Image 1 (cartoon, helix red, strand yellow):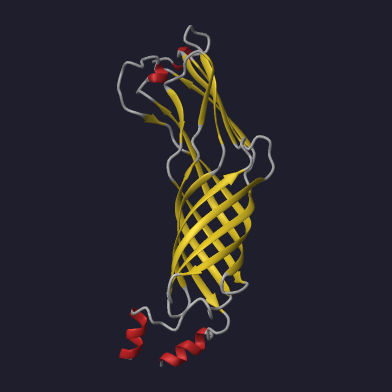
Image 2 (cartoon, one colour; image 1 turned 60 degrees about the vertical axis):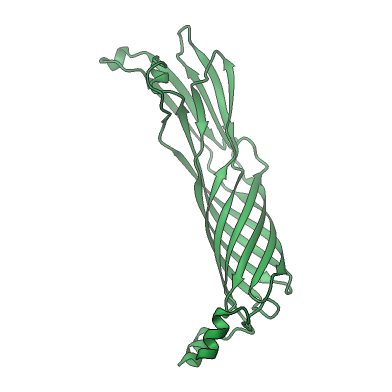
Length: 264
């Protein structure tokens, strides 16, 4: 028993990636940040209005088959959040009173959940008997339903029918329809346990080849001397961090019922 505990907490475990099982099911959860949105003014001045994206979350599940101790091939399923909202530089900027207040005013987030499927190839380097470093490259597609949403907003007034119209906008998501192809590059550091399962941390970047996945056209103060218009655009490229846990099976790892019997 004491000898087993010594091997468990020291770096001298018999588990290493040279003889590790070939099959892995990797579960990932992490945080990412979307590419910045571009605000293009077509007429007038619209400096008080901008697009904004906070950090978001994603979950991934990947099956990996080890071709040899160094190279592995994998298939990955993912679900990625792509949020968006408008932000005003000052309170009441859209109400005709930009001099009142100094805080940022953010609208409710619009969330687009993107399922994805990709194929990848990875190369692993040993950093001792328990630690490893891996580079991965994936090529795949994401799916987004095409949709268009129209908004009309009004200034404050006791009579809504006579309120001054201050903002009209139209948000389009994947207006052209179709799939979103991407490439994904990642680098991870992981620790292997005595049962050949692995805990890892990955930093990655994803680039989407489609640049028209989000577009919002707006007009401020229509019909007045302060009328201005423009567009806010962005894609679904992003970068972030993922925490992962890989479950392994196959020779030389014994089935679970045999491992339980050995511990009894």
